[in-house]
Length: 523
Image (cartoon, rainbow, N blue to C red; front, side, top):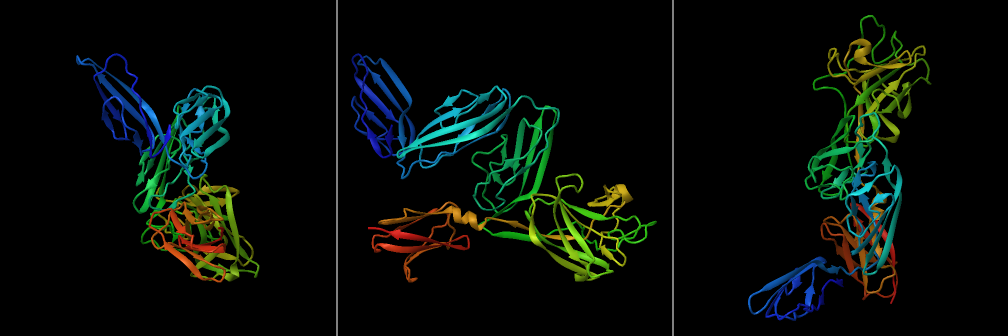
């Protein structure tokens, strides 16, 4: 074992009279040698390298030996390593196996794993494969890594959950990710949220690399090289059946980091206009107060692109109120349920603040966080003098596309089941996909060493874009040095040996934002 850019002296231990020697040194310099005693072999490539020696006597008889992974060359690190790892699945049926992937950084070259409850229980491989779990329970996993500067240990308690059997139900597919509005070539890590103990997973990542996966987790994430909107599909199954979920336009990729993408969405079809709908046998309006005393209306929005709802645009067709305190309440529900069940938010709006025959913009007090489909609608009151009617799409006919649900007699019904009418409300949510947050940029910037001497490094784990820069200035605001970043780079280095000892500031511009760090220079 030796550090990179250093050499090894090899000794011949062959027996019996030898006439010729032929050495081969994988990734060494030189990579071969004819003779008994090779010169020092220099290794510039980290990793494990094989060595081969072939010998022959004067009669032409020969023998050879190959030692694989004989020379271990490691990188020289600046700091001690940071241990990190992941597994291809964390919920395991008894008797099944797990593959582990090392994600440690700062050039580790030795790994020591401990798998509580697993077989084998220990491993020195970088990426251990086929660790079998035969007993139900929750088990810890520990990894110790070593580099040229020292060691680091990571213990994740109850990381692997082993279950005795699948159970009686087919799984239900679901997934999420915390990063959906991304810069090209940024890794995206998906979290499996499927229920009922799936035994197999089949992912398809449109536009991604890899484009597919058959494991629960993707240790190195999924990267997108092209800009655009991309679907993600997950198919899960067990012995009871399978389930598939596609989230359309779920990943949005741009050339650089973008703060947010916003749009209005709706359920009207091309050419449809909102109407104040009336139904035979019902007085009043469908979409407002009526003789059936429908108290709530909810529309289902099957959109996966956006993660925030900031407001709505409502076609108000009829409006009157018996008092200044009369109100309507707009409500959102989780779209994971087959009917509006789990309330996510609600907002009270006074009727006197609205206008009739008008597309009314109503902003929420706080943006609603969503992750996929949702229901959005309103509750109405039957107070004397109150009338509030939302425009509906014309009846599309029974059995055609319907997104409307109505609440009457303390129960939710789809519009076709209640009235044989397929329609949608004309409400258009104002939605956004919010990208990287300020705090993510804050945590992505590292300035070291601080205090510094002759060199200062600005590290951006999110990588710099074209036009990003760093300035060093003193307490009076005088700029002392400035450097523009190379697009795609993660480090800007400053030579500070010409700056006197004292307190200074580094102003870092990246992702359209400014961060200022206090630094000190000590001689």
